[in-house]
Image 1 (cartoon, one colour):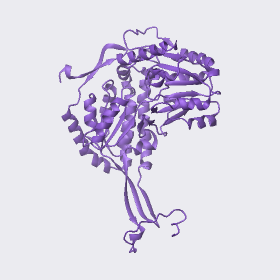
Image 2: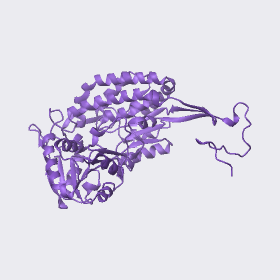
Image 3: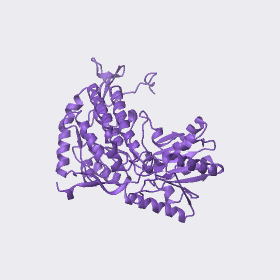
Image 4: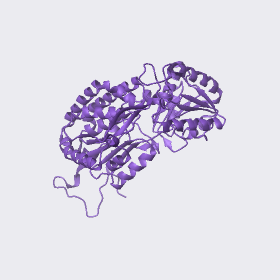
Length: 493
């Protein structure tokens, strides 16, 4: 394919550097991959769950050994090298968790009692499409790959064209652990994604990304009557109660929760609410923590914790949001330090910043800014902050910070979010056993945990009612079965 037809991936820390190129899939190429997945899926579905799990464990070991791809991931995504290395190793842990959990979660359920005989089995969909973003391409692919494959499906992965290189190379290696035709990688822009999502040979679509792309993907899938699972954006609020810890450890966690991956994480802290009486003390503690843990620079330089944002468009949008906040009377507080060797003019660097003195009407507060700029907002009453934190169309994550865990859980239960952290936020609060996903416009369906596996199967039932077993008399024409609870059927009227 001519170079001009390839997709070039640029280093966001050195925007003139081309990290690599990939060939976009053609419509015919997508059709061939879907057909191959359709041929491979039935035999894989008939393979014992224990054997599918063993293949996933073998793939996990291969993924751990391939953590040497971390520099490539850092160069294409702008994420610090240590984060990229950790992402690949965590992705291997995802594969191991689902391999261990699958035999129990996917086992047939049998009931044989006075009501009859019932078997519920978990049936895979067949070919599944996974459409993944650039900000954590390996782990967000693993969270779809592991449950989909161990459940007995085939998988077609379409990575983001902004960071497809490392995940594409890793998936090529993982495919060797599964039968031919079961795992495919298809590169390209939006037309490839919508063609795949609406393909009649695809029976489930899993998507992580933004609302604009989600609407296009959802429309394509809906036209084919294909179900979807979507993890979309969040405008996560961190709510500090009046007894919240402000010690170094807590503040370090909160700073990293807002600034990791330059704030470009769906579940990053996007707003911080602090009691008015503690606002000044909090800003001092938060700024001091940033001085300890935030170092802006090239992601390949040791010690750098915050790299560039992914594109010039992202940097421009973040600066516009900050400027708007300043025009509204806000005050910008720079956070952390600049790495001495950093050439911020070479890439899409945005200085980590806290914005003070704004209200909830400012766009940087009410929109998901998706970058290293975080507003710190004062509040006066608990009911008030719960209402403010839950305002808006998004409801992915939130966190509550308090010295009283019971009180924190109580407040968290009132927040309008799919996942609430306590005394932490973002990746330090995640657990492989805890289902993750949003409410409202932050998506539907779940990843992680048992729920993440069950997204990739359909319960199918075989039932013999008691009335028709062993020569039973059956029911009168037009009659309905009477449900029997623990105490037996209800008395007739």
